[in-house]
Length: 218
Ligand code: AP5
Image 1: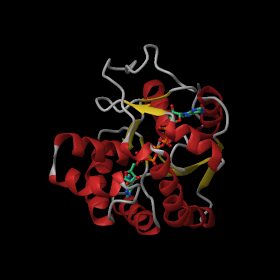
Image 2: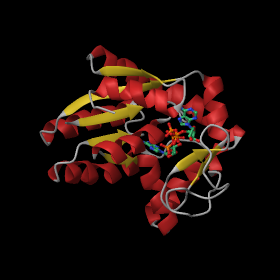
Image 3: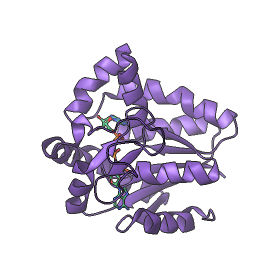
């Protein structure tokens, strides 16, 4: 099994589906959003710099992102674990860097999965999301509520609403996605590397489609 990249607008379910694949199939989930939030939690210099951009719903500069992701992808592959890269690349500079990095390190890159969903559903999913600052799991107040209100099923920590999940910030993230990230879909489509998953429906329905697409059993 080899490496996949998940691309999709904020709230399209990339993180939810990646975590299901980790649980059931031993993938390693590298989410640049989760990695940045961990830096912020630890109060690192990188985290403090990134927070200004993230809280506003804008992209963190490429030099910070590229430095952060590089070692982790290579290390995961050296351990023999297939990687799901979630949230990277987010623009053409990052996509071209990733291609070079895979080539230089002789890594297998099987496909880019685009999570397709209309904007009106995205805003509903983002503003209703509640996230665990401890383990990174996310829930939804209506579509995927935790067993005990406000508490993470995975680790028991108190859930929060992310600073960038307010309506105003979520709308800006969709604008940034359309401007910066959507062009990479054409870049990958030109090279016949793009797969599409219809992300409308329940998490289980999307998961079944994704398993078919990636060729892994449910
Ligand atoms: P990041 O954390 O990557 O945010 P994102 O891409 O905006 O994606 P989300 O985490 O918001 O959504 P998701 O698709 O994972 O959806 P989820 O599964 O949680 O990045 C945050 C910030 O970090 C960026 O804005 C940027 O500042 C910075 N950053 C990160 N990477 C960067 C990069 N490469 N370059 C520059 N900056 C970078 O689902 C959402 C909600 O919907 C949840 O509540 C979930 O329970 C619910 N849900 C999921 N699936 C379903 C379903 N099928 N039906 C109903 N509800 C569902």
